[in-house]
Image (tube, rainbow, N blue to C red; front, side, top):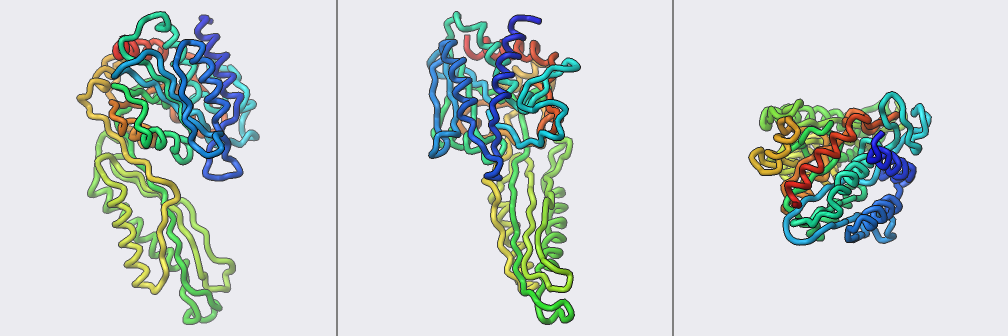
Length: 383
């Protein structure tokens, strides 16, 4: 095993051993500061200037901006430091202990996406004694898996600034220049409870929910007809009815219920306009059924993302990887980095198919190709 591979494994083992779950459920939610501090120490030892941006009042959630060199332009290598929650009982090995078997590295975050950082550090180590003409910037963010508040804080602060950014989410080293946005909404329906023997005694919120769900499915079909992008494997917007809660007894007219759904729009569309259309449809149903219907957002929207196909970064990524830039359905921090004025792509080791599930792993044969590829980008943008 090459020395660089040994260092990658040692660093990845340390990163995975630090739990850094982010979740909308406060029972699961943790800080990422120990991961940020560990990365900051490694990069400071390499000569990077370190800036830590606190993302919450307690300081236990933070972003890291580590810069080698100075001046305008340059390259950002970006990733998030948090993971999704996990069920240890469904893993074949300890999710917080890196283990190697079958030419794979198993551990929580091994591919999504703590594994990117040691590979990017290995790529950067070749240039430590080389004067950079433009800066190389490492970016490590908080809460990508929940609120994306880390990336939102960077966009609000207007930093970092660079010419190009690569977000190392798992794409099997194929460049991604486009992804859908995401909205998560709750619809609360309030009717009137009553004895089930006489429908006139109440107004069923569950029957109202039936009307709401039917209308949402109709709207889903309309969106599919209005907005199509053949670059996506699912070429139309998706709307998923995720969960419903309501009622308490079969012999009582349901007085209140709540439905949660997500909606993922293709690029070039405005989430605010879509939400306005949805709110108007809910108001119409409320009037027709004499119900009180309220819609609220469960998370802040993530915008859709599109980097032009003819941009320098996309053309370079296609040339270096031999892959045409693709589109994916999952959301990333790309739109927030793009807001900072950088050409942005998503490209990293491992497969998204391994993410968010037990026995997550990163393939060993992704290590050296990723390091080599990142070195070529560093040469182009920083030398």
